[in-house]
Amino acid sequence: MPDVRMASPRGRWILLTTVLGSSMALLDSTVVNVALPRIGRDLDADLAVLQWTVNAYLLTLAGLILLGGSLGDHYGRRKVFVIGVVWFAAASLLCGIAPNAGVLIAARALQGVGGALLTPGSLALIQASFHHDDRGRAVGLWSGFGGIGAAVGPFLGGWLVDGPGWRWVFLLNVPLAVVCVPVALRHVPESDGRPVRADAAADAAGPSAGAAAGTGKGRPHGRRHAPFDVLGAFLGALALALVTYALIEAPGGSTGVVSGAAVAGLAAGAAFVVVERRSPDPMLPLDIFASRQFTAVNLVTLCVYAAFGGFFFLSAVQLQVVVGWSALGAGTALLPTTVLMLLLSARSGELAEHIGPRIPLTVGPLLCAAGMLLMLRVGPGASYAADVLPAVLVLGCGMVTLVAPLTATVLASVDVARAGVASGVNNAAARAAGLVAVAALPLLTGMSAEAYRSAGAFDEAFGRAMVLCAAVLVVGAVLAFATVRRPAPDCRRPECRTHGSVLAPPLEGERAKGRLTLGDG
Image (cartoon, rainbow, N blue to C red; front, side, top):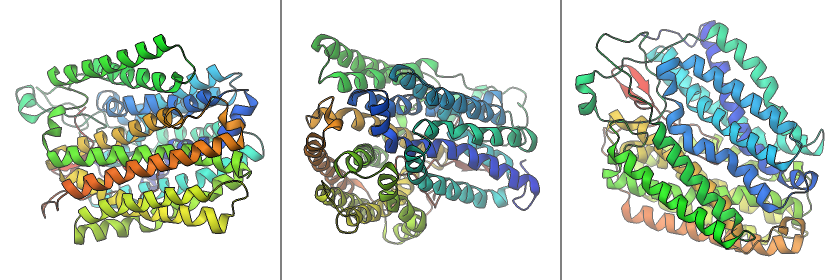
């Protein structure tokens, strides 16, 4: 049984190292967008390079996050977490010294691999280490402090870009890792896997995927770990990579190559579905989509996080290239969205418990759509107080309204024993949606490869992009109104009630017989 208490020195050290680890990934997800115009100018890169700078990271993270956490079951959660932190820091160092765009993109993809290890691993360590009486508070503090890291990201990123330079946006992760790794090795107890299901009960228990954080100190006699779904992970990542390539390269690439990549991506996606359907231990258990509400809520997730991904990618560039603000000004301008989520997400979750999720999941996307339409006022000579702030505040209120109920509805749509799997699938879906949006929006809005160098050209395409994002949000609102119903009174409730990430919903763990996990690897 895990027995570390929050009030103990070891408990505080565990919380520190997990917050530091998760903050590396959260910071990176918010600071890079602010640095994109400067990266493009310094590396003499076109818009496709800026898209790949964002998407190379999202690609490996979204493709591997369902698989990454299960490595801790097999090899030790502390060990895998530390490897993830070291990997992420090494890739960040490579980003910081990248001599050209190709090296930067490759390093960003490596960062995503590290993120897929440390993001679920940080939560797994908390769930595997703390006494069950303190676990909820520990998860809450981990989520809250991580949200503060996400909030600081745009401000810190802008300051670094305007000061020491964009390379320090990545180099910042190295000192964080230097602190995090020794603390983890000295103070965090190892747990080499929860008691895993018996061979005879494996099929009856059902497959699941994601990061695990159990309590076992060893492997009981007659039990086994589920094998890794390596083929499923490869096919899923390949499908995302090929479709992303086709979307990004379509404006100026060879028609034959782009078409071939698109067809191959769809084929890889179909193969992924076949493999997951036939695998005894799939990374993505397709039978979880037998719940109509779970399927519907994930479709809502795709809509809202596609819009968010496109918004935060383009708006940081719009504020710098078109409005003429510094990187610090652009980063600070977007800060209210995260601050509002940190301050109000817990209360939003409580409200949804009283009135049900249908209204918040309908009103929230509509508010976000209104915020994005208000961004149409943000052009040359825009005022922060009159033009930017109203849009950002309305968008932030919409995000507050929908994110907590979205997570709660995902958890309530499946059996309690599969809540961790459901959360992992929902998190991966959100990241994949953002990935596709960053790839597709420039194509859909007619944004040329050099558009970000021209204020007029980018402003026109940005306006079309905001209308598209708003339309996608309206579709999400209509879908939520038509499909979401009040969950059962005894359904699972989220533990991460304070959330600050604007690009993905929070990860949640399973709760069963005194332990929490994020699924059976």
